[in-house]
Image 1 (tube, rainbow, N blue to C red):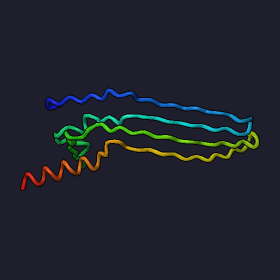
Image 2: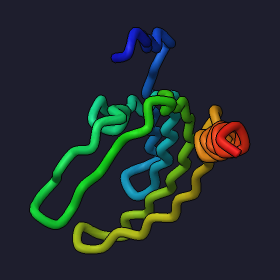
Image 3: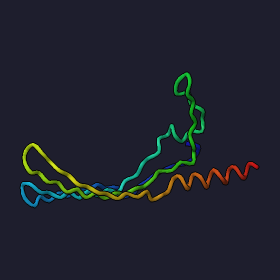
Image 4: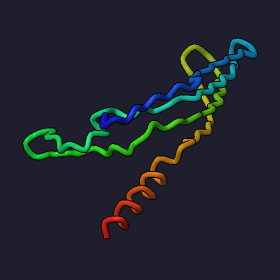
Length: 113
């Protein structure tokens, strides 16, 4: 769009490992590295009418965002009718899209003044 090409060739993966200590206790580890791709309707500078009351325009400077996450989950099954699960996780966005967007908008606004 607008002579800009956007390709994101990165190794994206999801990993899920589960270990059962016995019939009542199990541990699950999940890890992923992914990319949120920007939709073209969010990048277009053209004013689009969503419905009779709502109009929107996109930002052509939006970029794809890479992120990763790790989750650890423990499950205890005391019987067939009851289950207790404890989990925790970590995630991180690598590209800081809000900060980058704020810096670009500030530079544009100051250029207009």
